[in-house]
Amino acid sequence: MSAFSFLPLLLALVLSPLLPGIINRTKAFFAGRRGPPLLQTYFDLWKLLQKGAVYSRTTSWLFRAGPLVGLAAVLVAAMLMPLGNFPALIAFPADFLLFAGLLGVVRFFTVAAALDTGSSFEGMGASREVFFSALTEPALLVALATLARQFDSLSLSTMLGPATAVHWLHFGPGLALVVIALMIVLLAENARIPVDDPNTHLELTMIHEVMVLDHGGPDFAFILYGAVLKLWLFAALIVGMVLPATGNPWLNLLFAVGGMLVVAVTVGVIESVMARLRLLIVPQLLVGAGALAAVAFLLGLP
Image (tube, rainbow, N blue to C red; front, side, top):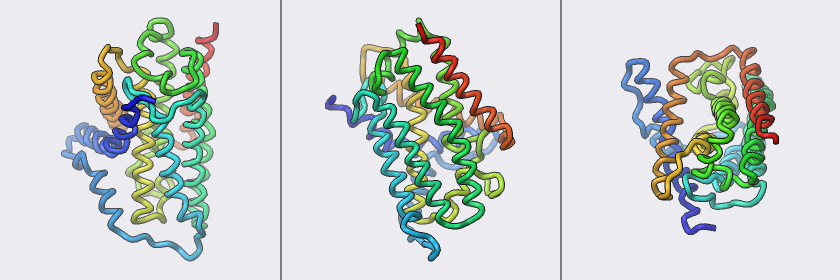
């Protein structure tokens, strides 16, 4: 373990709430508005932590445990994600499987907490979330398997980073397909347009937001913070694949942080130029992401 292995986790904890601010400011630019402050998510988290939580008498311990377990799982997943030239805080062979599994734990407890309320709206959102996740998770796993085979490594810390620059010369088309697939997965997993609209308040069209309607105060702060950390992790996957190689690890880290901001701007541009897809079309998009990852895997076969 490197002496600076804590840096990727520290940057994720501190800078991840900045990504939604960049996305919203990008969307405001395209709409000709000023937009909310870049630090709005930090303000929201602080405000929510100052409030109290209200629990329905019909809910059980599962409803209270959902936000805590979900945040704990995404924090452990953040410990597995490298950034720049610095390895993750926790790295071992096949850690990418644990990474994907932890994201599944986050979803499971979010869905379980939504179902525990007994609300028909939250149950509808949970059903959509599980259905779409059944299409995004294979795309994510096949994309990671493609990287593992191409780089002959089973650890995220050696799959991602400046070392991938050499592989772009030999496996550029396949890596490009993986990047596109991961970008689609990022949009789906983080409830972004064109899969979901994070700003909508119409229950009939919401997916993720409708599952957390009954959470408030610190519980909702945990959910919000876990969501921005999850966005950071998926952005780090993409940045780790396209990061330029230099001989200076600190310059690589600077490029990585800049790349995270570029991914946030890209998400804002996508949300500005596209409308939310119909729910019947979303599965086709997610299946397409899985197909792109599968083609990339086949291209990497000897």
